[in-house]
Length: 307
Image 1: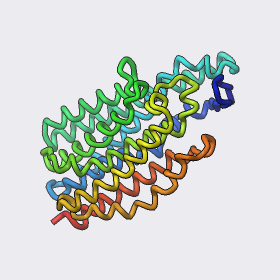
Image 2: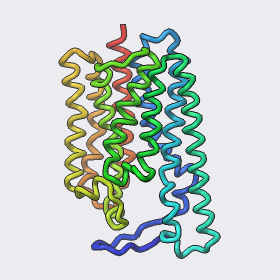
Image 3: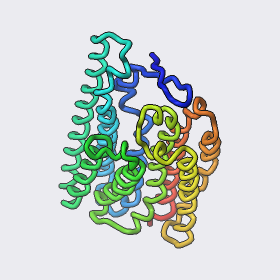
Image 4: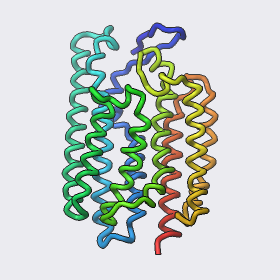
């Protein structure tokens, strides 16, 4: 299904009902964010927990449920655009699409509720401060893509995921293990948190031309493709500079292992100058970089920093 969009460039937007099917709306590739962020926090606090395996399992499950919930409710704003995007379909078909969007939203709310309930169990195991961490995360989740705040459409999506799915998730996972917060953990979370923000920027860069024609006010549309591509490059450099700095300061003895992920930046950097139609792999390749970097940071800490 296609709909031609008017604009300075000749683009054809492929509006597919498949986008709103459960599996597509779940966005399985993005679940790596929750696994890596919570996994890093768990690894950093592993040696401080009396029952690390149970706590780790509950935390990973809760983070996956919350991430899944965020993904499933993300398209809820499209419910008012069905007639515009699928005007060539029958009323019954449009109704089916709207129903899929609402069902995904309900599934998302259920996943978030299940994640919150697991979080309450973790509160009992760790401490009351986790309530406030979780509350802040849940509020942030709804503000990310839902009006009236809608960080995504205000150009604040990258900052929001950096804080919510990066820093806050790492600290929250660390807290359930160590029952305390730490500035050292904050610094150790920064490289991976920047990669979480880069994953969102990769998505915006991939869809820039289409978002521009549709009037989506993402950060990339607001600042322009070239500026955000440069921000992507600078943040990517920072991601690998920070571990070196932390290693030299003696804060993270095994973090130098993350340098083994450097080859994974080559293809994403090349795609930044590619034509729009060939830019699609930018998002999954950035996700692969995040997964590789995160896994190396976790392994490096467990091998060299845990005594």
